[in-house]
Length: 538
Image (cartoon, rainbow, N blue to C red):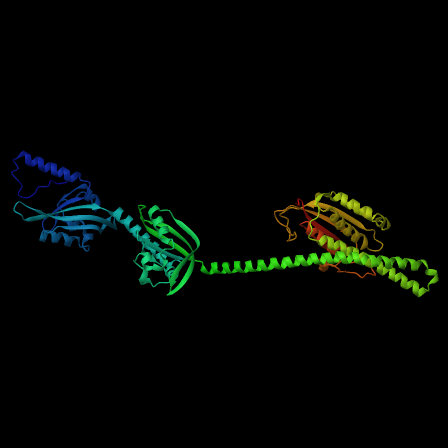
């Protein structure tokens, strides 16, 4: 760097003058910010410290050269005109965050500076040059631009968002940005709410607790979330209630300072109204179902009482009919062939009627709402008692009965005896000619994740599955549900005796114990009845 020697300087013979000049030059040279001095109207470079040389990026050999010669890329950037204006008028020029394009490393690049052009005067008050000082603020300006672009992008995102969004600034919650979905919720024209405190633009939203929520978010920076929150508004001139899912977030600047509140809202009025309507309908239907269930229970109770009374009242005359028919048969030698046939038919019908009445009485008792005593019941003992009852029939049909290990559970023992007694009776009744019956009874504990289980079973309950299988005549799977209907018969009485109540009674007993029963069968290959019973029924 060449020495800075101002015009008309004091007597060089004075040592103090040289000391001051050297000190000034040293100060300029070591300054951390750019400093340059340009002399004459042509702006010839007389002084340039290292900081300004680094900014220019043209090397160190610039002293004595013209400013425009060193930096030709400034020709169309008004800087040369600014220097000339300062030199001509003596009015300093100051710029802040000014973009300056400089060629560095062979490439034109954008930089930003705070700089000043200050006129230099000689002893006579005449301008002889311009001093250039500055500061490189490129990094700060780029960061600022990025923040501004980010802010612009964010606001653009809000305006284009499919959900309602708005920004409210300051303690008065002035509406800065609001998109169309938010304006639709408010039911107000944009001019009446934009750039105004929210409760001035929406006076109908006052005194509903929203002021306190917004103030809290703005003061503390804590967000707030609400679901299905009702807000009463005057929308498009009409009173309306809007249900919203909304969030209030603190809106901050790059330093983390809270500037306002960002509101995000979803209008869920339609969903809420639909749900409320459904709830009302469900409530009404539940009440109706409860009344219908009460009436049904009363009807069942009346029916059970009627069946019980009727069964008892019918059994006495049937007994007498059967008794007198027996007496008539005892005197059969005195009767003709036709009379003997009629007497036999009377006795057969009376016996069938007695069986039907007995089964009806049993069905009525099982269907009764009166609680029955439960206990721990070993199904092995239940099946054994059933086999003892059918011991003669098993022997006559040469049946093979295989019984696996069966569980013990809480149940009404008499009903378990009826359940398995009916299933054993069916397995011994519906057999194929010339084929020895084979009956298998086994049990297993169900895997709760097993697919294909009856839909009525509860996933949180452990069940036993007890199966009674036979190799009898079977039936079509299409009738697997019908066989449990009361009085439903797949075969005529002439082929197979029965009242059509047994399997219906089995289903009723399974339901009484919190379980169910299903049938699977193939014609000519036998049937399997699977009873599902809770492992712990209290």
